[in-house]
Image (cartoon, rainbow, N blue to C red; front, side):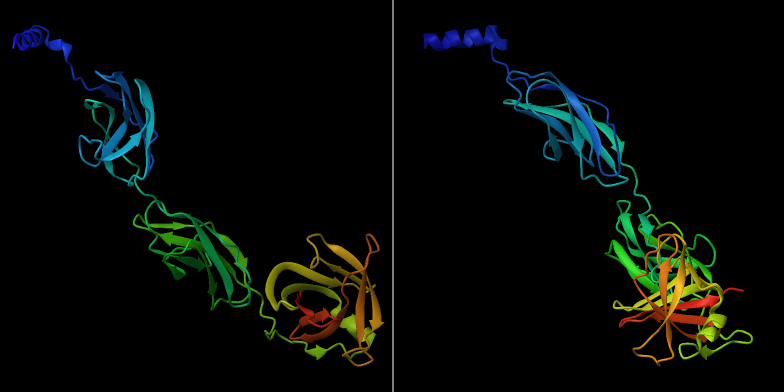
Length: 349
């Protein structure tokens, strides 16, 4: 009984002998704020009456967040620290404060508030149109960012003026896709068009860059005073006479893969001295010497084929060609083997 009285007297006279202090913490300013993340930290000024078990930051859309809300754990011990807030919602106000926990409880720093950046328009790029034909073309796009807001529609728009929008012609590819391709139909032949991809979210519509393309000249058009005739069965002098000049190669068809492509920059030119000038095989323009050889297979015995030798280095072309016909002033020539590629050229005046 006497021992108990002594203990009570000691506790009364020296109350500081038993302390249960929690940590003292400050919160730093919020920095590096994006649409979905931010950086914040704090400093443990005092660990209290026991060692720091854990420290970090906590945040919420409500004031005075606690460790029962979202947290980012840093480490133990006293001193300063920095943590990152992640998976935030764009355009939202958040409250954040530092915390530190010891065996007696959790101490919090002052509360800081900030707004995440708002969502933005989607970002995307436009695919080059391919293939391009007389009245159609295929293009599309790829969405590289949804602007942190779900894409509710995407597709392509086009017109004859630069920067087409949804107020012009457009085709939707729907939602839920980051890459899409669409075929445009009903175009005018030999016409310049601009096309660009678009994507729409809750903020608005973003567009890819413009792509300019030209539809093919209709190789079946009927110009004034048209020439239509077969050439493969004609004498060599007749063939030479009718093919002389420059032909813009607008369509390439056939081959093992079933090609059907339009072009605007390829040409083939035949000169009176049996030279063949073209850029259909390589980017650079080449000049070839034509050797006319009798073609034995698939055509009449009178048929000639072109064998080409590049003048610059004396190398031979990997293919030989037959001048087939002219249809409405469009020259058609093709390779001599199976799965031949056909070239269609419009006479340049």
